[in-house]
Image (cartoon, rainbow, N blue to C red):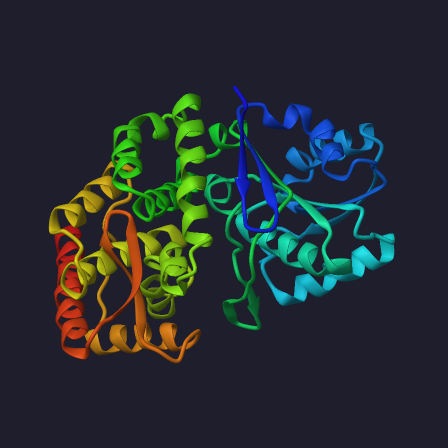
Length: 368
């Protein structure tokens, strides 16, 4: 079952296709983007070079494209300005023009790299994104993961306007569940910024999603595009920041706890902490806050045990925020269907930080 959804931005549209076996017809799909096939550059992660990237390459050749590639070595962060420069060099070497095609096969960061370069190359070259993990299937059609500059992650980004996104659910079904958890969080955020109906429908499908039920995943992925598109098209910068829910706290925890803790675990903690701030600093209902906790648990994402001094945690939150803005504003839920940049005063932040960190220390003691 392949569902096709047209995501209409103000100036262009994205052809979003989702379902098991979606890559089986990739050649004709890609050909429809450019009309007359000539050149295609594939950007892929080394670990997918013999899997989905190989299938994509063969499909492009069968469709009449001359195919070149840029393979990102295993363990390397593709979402960086350094790799953007490398991709531009590959595009120049292959003679790619605005009438050719750039295809990404990999994670959300690699798709962000490809989209960034595609938007700039020759004033705009069509990109087709093939996210290989669930989180990318949720996000890349409507938003670009930022590129790092040196040691500073996610500093450069722009509008994501791919010509097509192909989300093959066969890639999700073979992935370990830990690799799907970031996708679960993306689905939760997408439903939270959408509407009550979307939020409720996601809650009803959690067990089906975890079991990789195709019909349930197709439904929630298609619905996620609607909620994310509404936020992306908003004239309010505050509303567009809704998709960043939890990320400021997650970055703060990353700086304190180090790189060994998975990003999905840090982001889940960020969502838990910022939802509590939203109850007091905004209008978020406490029942919805507890419902978010329950859904994180239902998705198999437990609370993270750790010890940290409140002063260090608060300083890290401020540093993470001021790294990208001159104003101390956090994207906090106001209600289901509304996440907005919000002011958090010093007393409120300190009080919640102390309570939050005490609860995490208690978990650590209980596990000892």
